[in-house]
Structures are given as C-alpha cells and as structure tokens.
Image (cartoon, rainbow over all chains, first blue to last red; front, side, top):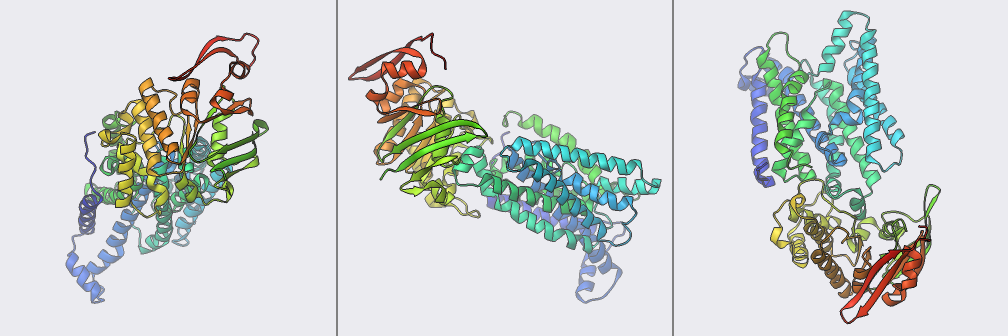
Amino acid sequence: MNIRALQPRVLYAILLPVLLLVLLLALNVGPVDIDLGKGMLDWFNELTTMESLILFEIRLPRSLLAMVIGATLGLAGAALQGLLRNPLAEPGIIGVSNGAALGAVIVFYYGMAGFAWFLLPLAGLLGALIAVSIILLLVGQSRSIVTLILAGIAINAVGGALIALALNFAESPYAMQEILFWLLGSVSNRSVNELFIALPFMLVGWGMILYCGRFLNALTLGEETAKSMGFDVVRLRLVLVLGVTASVGAAVSVAGNIGFVGLVVPHLVRPFVAYEPRRLLLASGVTGAILLLVADIAVQVLSSNGEMKLGVITSLVGAPFFLFLILKSRNVLQ
Amino acid sequence: MSLLSGHGIDYHIETIRILEGIDIQVESGELVGLIGPNGAGKSSLLRLLTGVEACTWGEVRFDGQPMTQMPAMQRAQRMGYLVQGAMAYWPFSVEKVVELGRIPYQKWWQQASSEDQVKVEAAMTKTETLAFRNRIVTTLSGGEQTLVMLARIFATEPDLIFADEPVAALDPYHQLHVMEILRNHATENRAAIVVLHDLSLAARFCDRLYLLNHGKLDCSGSVNEVLTRENIARVYGVDSHIECNQKGVSVTSLARISEHHP
C-alpha cells in the first residue's frame, strides 16, 4: 500500500475535528427533530424542556457511550494485535467478550434484568473477570503466546456454548428475543447510568494499555529481544490483558457484542502511523470512536422504526471491508 | 575485574541438564567466540549471560555486580543482544528499527528525543545502513537486515554485545562486514561475545575461544590453543586441516570420523 505515514500532529489535526463533527451530527439525529442550541441553552438555564431532556438524557449519553465503546474496541484491538504480533487478533480472542456476554445473558435468563439497572453491567463485568481469571490460571507462568491464544479460544468456546444453552432453555420466546437482541449489540435506550458504570473501568483499562505502548514497540523484534531490552514480558503481558479485560468487559457489559471494530480499525490506521504499535494505540482509539459514532448514526437514519442493531451494521460493513483490507495489504504483511 | 564473568553455571530445563559447571570471563577489549557442535548449549549459555534467562545454579556478574541485582533498564543500556535470525514483525522503516535501540533510555510516555536521533544516525553510519534508512526492513536482503539489527544494538551504545550466529546465513562479503563491525566494537575498549559455526571466521576475528560440547566446557584459550586437529576431531567428530599463515588461519573439514557418536 502506498500510504504515507502522517506526523502525529497532522494525524490528530484531522482525527479530532472529525470526531467533534461526528459527535455534533450524532446529537442531531433521532426520531424527533430538536433545536440543539435551544436544548443547550435550556440546560444551562436549568429549564426542563423537551429539547434539553432529549439532548442530555437520551442523545448525549447514547453518543458518548458509542464513542467510548468505539475507542475501547479500537484501542484493545490494536493492543492485542501488537501483543500477539498477529493482525487477525481482536478483543474477543482472549475470551473477554463472551465471558461478559455470558454474565449478562445469565441475568436475562433468570429474568433479573428488570430488578435494578446495574445488575446487567455488573454481571457482565463479573463474567469478563471470571473468563480472564480462568485463562490466566490455564496459562500460568508459561511464556508461550500460543498457549494464551489457545486458552482464549477455549474459554470463548465455553462461553459461546453456555450462551447457546441459555437460549435453548429460555423460558419464553420473549426472554429468548431479549437475549438475542442484547447479544447483537446496541447503545440505544442507554442512560447516563450505563456510561458512569462503564467509564471508570474503561479509563483504567485504557491507562494500562497505553502504559504498555513502549513494550509493544520492543515486541516488534520478538519477545527474546524485548526481554533483553529490559522488559518483564510476563508482567507486561498481564498488565495488557487485564487492561483489555477491564475496558472491553465494561463495553460488552453495557452494549453487548459489537463485532469487527476491534479487528478492522487497527488495520485501517496502521499505514498512517508507520506501522508503529505504540502510535497505533491512541490513533486506533480515536478512529474507533469516530467509526462507531458513524455506525450509530447510520443505524438510526437507516431504520427509524424497529431499529437495526449497532453490532449488525458493524459486522455487515466490517466483514467485507476487512476482506478488502487483507487483499490490499497482503504484500506488506508477511 | 572482568567486564563479564560466569561461575559454575548450571542450567536445567525441567529435568534435562543443558549446561553444567561453565566458567567464563570476558575482559574489555576482547572479542570472544563461543564454538561447539549443534546442541552443545552455545545459545543457552548466551541467553544466561545476557540475563534474559536465569541460571539454575551459579552466577553471572557484570562489572562485578551480580546480574540478578541489576535494574533491568540499566542492564538493557549496557548490553545488547542480537538474537539468532533477528527480524521485525511489522513492516518498519530501517530508521524506525534502529530507533528501537533507544528504548532503554526512554520513560514509558516519552518519544525519541533529538539526542536519540543523533545516536540513531551514528549507529547507522557505523553499520553503513544510512543508504537505506527509508526502506522497509522486511524488503531488505538477509545481509542488510543483519546490519540493521546490529545498528539497533549500536544505537543503545552498549559496552557488551552478544551475537548469536550473526553470520550464519550471510554471503562472504557480509560475513566479513559483520565480523569487522563486531571486532571494531571490541577494540574500542568494549567487548563482544559471538556464537559462531564458521571456525575460520572464529580463528580470524576472535581473541579467545570457548569450545562447548554436550553442555560442558571442553576447553578454552587462544585460537591456537583451542583450534587444534585433536580438539576438533574429539568435539566435532571430523578430521580437519588447519593452515596458519600471514593471511590468517583457515580450518577445512576433510571427513567425518566414523566412530564418533554425537
């Protein structure tokens, strides 16, 4: 691919205004047309009007949630691809997504989702934590990356099987539909509460991932060389995996599985950051935020009634796009 | 005091004994060769000496200080390790690969400074890799890639370089080039330890040799002491012809010795 890498200043001078623009656009989209300026003004004057309610209770939480989830998926995908030195890695590979999804599905299965709003995200986070604990126990002190991947795949499969079991024995078609819809991934009808429960975990996870940036650069020359460059490979791998668990676990817990963002975004961004794993992290985070916001806008515009799920559109667009990227970059990556 | 010394090094992987009772010293100004047949434990010894792996028994000291007590980043600044068949997983430019050598001097949030840039430039000059600084490293020839990986090590400005078979897959021109670079490094009152299979190159460039066999030190000393027909027959199981003249030493393997069991 003949894409020239961009200076960080130039890259963010493009990405950040685009992000702001897309966010403004997202706030404008919804079933009813509202005057954004009036909503903002009313909110400042502490007037409870329809405009300020729609803007600050519905649209802003939803858009911010799409933004931070997109950022998480982009960041986590870039981190795992760097760690495993495998461009096919995605956040789900270490079993976090299915673990979180299973936690949430159990809450649905026993019909507890309605009891309290925080049960669902909490169960999701717990599921992610359990999944990753089992993986870390399986891997132990093993230095092998392959063990980590295989353990992740195994736990993912177990999670998937248990979700299938829950669907199989769901009490009513309604419960089954609820689970299925939730699994497809969406940020609609979310409130500030979901944002507040997910954001702390995401921030901690982002910090842990970014802390490993220099280590990921060193890993470009292999684990042995990274070790000789002063890095404690086993410890930093743990930090990175836990960072991904915290952030992706939180994302899946509030929004379900949103596929392909974590896989595709790093591929998209890589040529622009000269393939440097460390620079890729933040750039993938910002790009992920932009793309998921765009996807959420598209979902609302394309189907105003009986809304299409966010996870459906990301997979629908992501999969063929991924194929296209592979075809274009197969000469660069070995 | 030696720059690097290992005393009574034992190394086991699970219950298999890889190395036993190895003593080794490296002084400033020396280029030391590690030789021996396949499976003798050369690479394992090198990894223990770099501190990438820990000894089962025994101790490695760098500048008189036990390796296990050295802070990791200080170790990384003073020693460079060229692994066997070193390569980059992502399509980095040559310059970016060399820049990785400055990592041990940077905090986790820092980028390469202008001082780092100067060192990178110097390392590329030393290894004659400036000409392809903007090329993608994975598109270079094997010889050029080895030079780039060496440049990465020089960017760190280490006192001691460890190189595991750096010339294994290179043509004669690049073999000599890489060995000359390592030789010059040692002569600047620093040092290098090189694992070699080519005994003629070892004889030509090294000050001292350590000959390993079955995880034990068979013998060590000057080139003339170690590279004798008897030693080579005993350890490698080949009959050889050794020629010394003003142009250097050359070792030619003539025939396998049939009663030798490796």
